Length: 393
Ligand code: SDX
Image 1 (cartoon, rainbow, N blue to C red):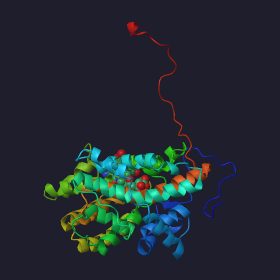
Image 2: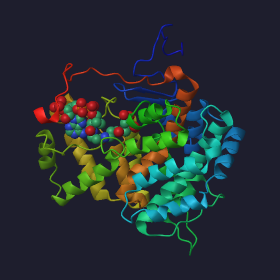
Image 3: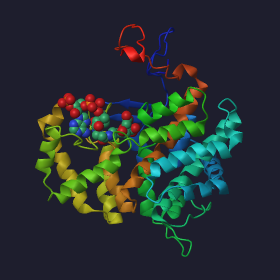
Image 4: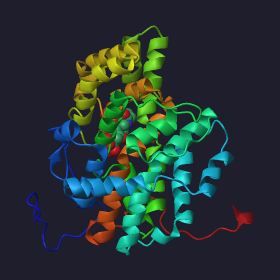
C-alpha cells in the first residue's frame, strides 16, 4: 500500500509496471514528481534539486543539496580520448545520434561504475551522467557549428556551464544572462520525468537485462529522437515555419491535418495520456510571453502558435479526439529564442529527462517487481507448415 493504491498480494507484473516516482492524471491534467505538483516545483525549485528529488525520493536539506551540487560539479570533464570522439562525426551530423553514441561510450571510459548492484558504482555513474551530459550536449552542438570545444568551468552552475560551453568562445569572456539561465532551468524541470513514456520505458527495458546505466540511457536517447516523442519540439518549429511561409494560412493547414494528408499532423498536439491540457504546456505558455520578451524571441511564430492553438481548441475534430497542446508545442520557440538551432531542441529535452531516466532505472534495478516484464504478443501469423525446397517453390 503506497497511500495511493493497494496492490493485491498476488500482483504480478505483466507488461506494465508500478512506480513511486511520477504521478500523472491524464484527464485532470495533473503531474506530480514524488507527490509534489509540477506547478510548485516549476515555481520554487531548481533543476538539480528536482533531480535529487526524483532520484532519492525526498527534497534535499540545504546541506544535502550543497553536497549534491558540489559533487556533480567535479565530474563535468570528459576523458580526453572521449573528446576526440567528436572529431569523427560528419559536420552535418544530427546531435542526437552523437549524444547517444557519446553516452554509450562513457561505459568504455568509466568501467569502475558499471555494476548495477554495487551501490557506490550506481552513485558514481549517476553523478557522472548528470555532470557529463551537459558537456556532451554542448560538444554535440559545437561540432555541428564547427566551433572549438570549451572545457567546463566548475565555478559555474550546471545550466550556466552548459550555456557557456554552448555559446561561449575561448577568446572572450562569456556573459551569463540570468534570464536565459532561469528560463532553461525551468524547462529542464518540466521535462525531468514523465512516468512510463517511450524513452523511459526503453531505459527500463534495456536496464531490466542488467545493462549498465550509461548504455540504458543511450537507448533512451535514441527512443527520444523519434519525431512522435521528443523530436516533436523540432517538428513544431518546422510546422510553424511552413505555415508562415504559406502566408500564415492556418485554415489551409488545419484542413490538411483534418484530411489526414500523409505526414501532416498538428505537431505538439495530442498525448497518449493527457486527454486534457498538458500541465507543462500551460506553464510554458504562461511564461513564453515574458521569456520571449526578455530574450527577443520570434513573436510572429509565437502569435502563429497561439492562433493555431485557438483554432484547434475550438474545432470539433480536435475536441472530439481530445487533442490539446503538449509540452512540445511552445518549448521550441523558447529554445530558438535562446539561440539554439532546431536540431538541438531534442538534445535539450534529453538534458531535462536525464534525472527521470536515472531515477526510473534505479527504481527498476532496486525493485524487480517494478520491472517491465518481457512484453508478450498475440500471434497472427501462419499455422505450422512444412518446408518447401527452393526448386519446388
Ligand atoms: C511527448 O508519453 C509521454 O509522456 C511523452 C512525453 C514525455 O514527456 O515523455 O509527454 C513527450 O512525446 C509528447 C508528444 C509529442 N509528440 C507530438 O506532438 C507528435 C504529434 N502527436 C501525435 O503523434 C499523437 O498525438 C501522439 C503520438 C502523441 C499520441 O497519440 P495517441 O494519443 O495514441 O492518439 P492516436 O495516435 O491514437 O490518435 C487518435 C486520433 C487519430 O485520429 P482518428 O484515427 O481517430 O481519426 O487523433 C488523431 C489521430 O489521427 N491525432 C492527431 C494528432 N494526434 C492524434 N491528429 C492530428 N495531429 C495530431 N498531433
